[in-house]
Image 1: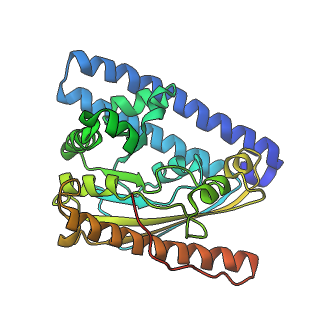
Image 2 (image 1 turned 90 degrees about the vertical axis):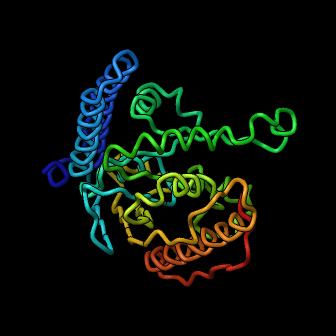
Amino acid sequence: MLKNILPNWLNGLIVGLVLFSNTLLWGCIVLILGLIKLVLPLAWISNLLHIAYQGWCRGNRLGLKLSNAQITTVINGDVNQRGWYLLISNHFSWLDIVVLSAIDVLPAPKFFLKDELKYVPLIGSGAWAMGMPFMKRVSKAQLAKNPKLKGLDVARTKHSCRNFRSHPTTIINFVEGTRFTKAKHQAQQSPFQHLLKPKAGGVAFALEVLGEQFDAILNTTLMYEAQSNHICGSFLRGRLNKVTINICLEPVRAELLGNYQQDSQFRSHFQESINQLWLNKDAELALAYGKQKSEAVIINNKEIELP
């Protein structure tokens, strides 16, 4: 195996080229099929799109297997590849997308993406072709200037989620809305030690549209052990030691289904549920990283107002 005979830098270079070539190949194929689908919206073209997307996922799996990193996936429960799931996860790195898409037991992972990513070559066009939702946050100032913007993101998300009904799917939502960095953590004054504040809206919208079709919620925690604070940089230099993915299947409880946009009482309860989930996830990360650093970690469990 490459990881046993090559120096770290060469292993990282080869793995980076494998992942880049994989995205270039399948990204172009998905884009071409997406353009054809605009003209000929036929079922068999959608099937070809999903086959091409699965090819990209398999390529990511190969790239990770060639890397120096030890990758451990722990799933608490049984996942059906013909099922529908909502996966909610923390977000540390661009590598998170590769890692989650490479889990072979998950049915067709699809991502909630920031609106800015639609302009990224191949990534944005591929996501557009697959009908993935782009989340565009609207500030209070923007709403004040243009009230018509209210609910626009909700409508877009609902439309995209409805498109997932015909194929077994894992909808992946990075609940923090952006990657964790120390600068963002400080700017938010996040009460969590290893997480940013969660944004409950995307999760609520997905549950509102597909809640009854979801077989379970996949509560996922990503953890990395690298030789520097930059996870992708460590990975591409062959210096990412370990990746751990903990997935816990949780039922879609009735109290999680409701109208998040218009029902203020439901919105408040839903935010409390996500808040408690994030407190537990932060404690899990603190325990894991505390073992790595052999030092005690204190969790601040104060109440948080969620967006």
